[in-house]
Image 1 (cartoon, rainbow, N blue to C red):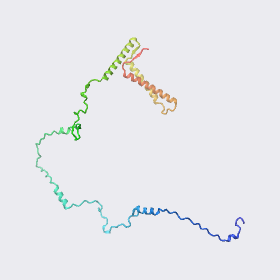
Image 2: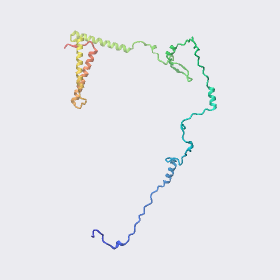
Image 3: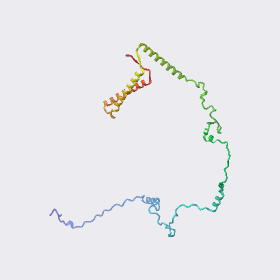
Image 4: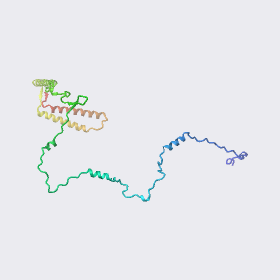
Length: 255
């Protein structure tokens, strides 16, 4: 029982004084009146609630049909007089018995006027501060290439190029002639050249078919090496095919 109820004591009969806790006054900013005044000044009147009192139309002026459609200005007497004075009376409609005027001829060439090309303005230049203009063609400012001393003549570099090409062709012909005399070279006939060309194209088709069958991802060294080998072989065949197609006369060694 002693654990459940506290022991009785005489001191418990003495009333205890209640302790009142005094809270400090709430903080009020010294700028509060200024903020309130500024808010009142900047706030729009009737912003959310609308006007305090709305004027109601009387029952006699109820909304009528077509009352809100735009209306044209009423014509005054002066505007009517102005309109009547400005308008001119149109000629009367010709009668059925009247004949149109016949035999009127003109020297105007309608085909020439319709197909004529408008003239382009000639270029001019201004040679004074007052805007005096002259034709630019005869002013000397436009270069006249037909009046050059060497106009119409073949340039010197073309002569040199032609001489070099002719010299190279002569040297090649002499070399081929010497090799033929020695019997070290053989001339390919058209049939042999065509057969070799078809064989080269067939080999290129086979390599191209094999190249198309490669995988898209070359993530191993063997795949990369195979792809490079096929590309080099196809490039060599393309060069050989181009050589046999461009040159009709081909010599090969006998050995």
